[in-house]
Amino acid sequence: MNEIANRFNIDGGPVDFEPGQTILQAALAAGVFIPHLCAHPEFTPHGSCKLCTVTVNGRSGSACTIAAMPGMDVQSDTPELNSRRRVLLQMLFVEGHHFCPGCEKSGNCTLQALAYEMEMLTPHFAHFFPDRPVDASHPDVLLDLNRCVMCELCVRASRDFDGKNVFSLAGRGMASKIVVNSPTGLLGDSDLAVTDRAATICPVGAILPKRVGYKVPIGERLYDPIPISAQVGRLSGATAESGCCGCGSGASGGGCGATASATVAQKEA
Image (tube, rainbow, N blue to C red):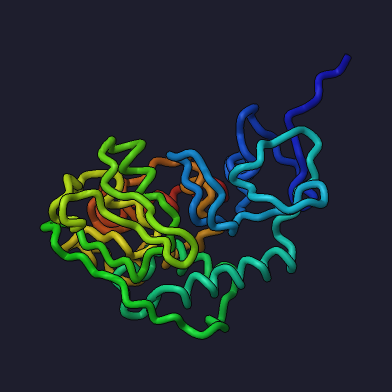
């Protein structure tokens, strides 16, 4: 009896996978980009942002949580799915304060990079203009909840990597928010350290190390020279991250961008 190959099709092309991989993990490892925001190779996915929604054998689901199975027919890069992703991105933009020209995360922001990738030209919806706390009480880290997209990467990093549980999610629905585990609720009274994984994992500009905002100039940041869809090696975890997204606290000032460039060069070689 012939063994069934660990292979499925995505957008008509074959993708081999290792048992235990999700569709997203297998696709990225094979060099196929699926837009995603809350999924991260270091942590167990929970499928909250829905940007990685794909169609599997005619049914929709999150690519970050669906296990890869032999013979699956996966659709991802289609006009309908990309249109849905643009709407999700527009909703994320208007729900918070994401004014890219004035944000020091510009060029290193995953939300911004995905908006470019999905050709989002306008926010479409009316801005909420929320009034959320900006916590500058920590000597080395700034917390601006106006930019938070509730991906919970900081929660998972602090709990699963740092072992500190500095951040957690409170409330439900529109009242959901990230809270800080300290006697006062302020970051400065928590045991967060700037070297913690939670201090640098934020994909937007909600958690920022202080005094390194422009160490990597605009134009040389992570997504400035190379679009996010061409950085599948870094996104899959196949290439080492420098510990940040160009904030300057990594292995070198432009570490993330340099890593991405190397990945693309290897793929083109």
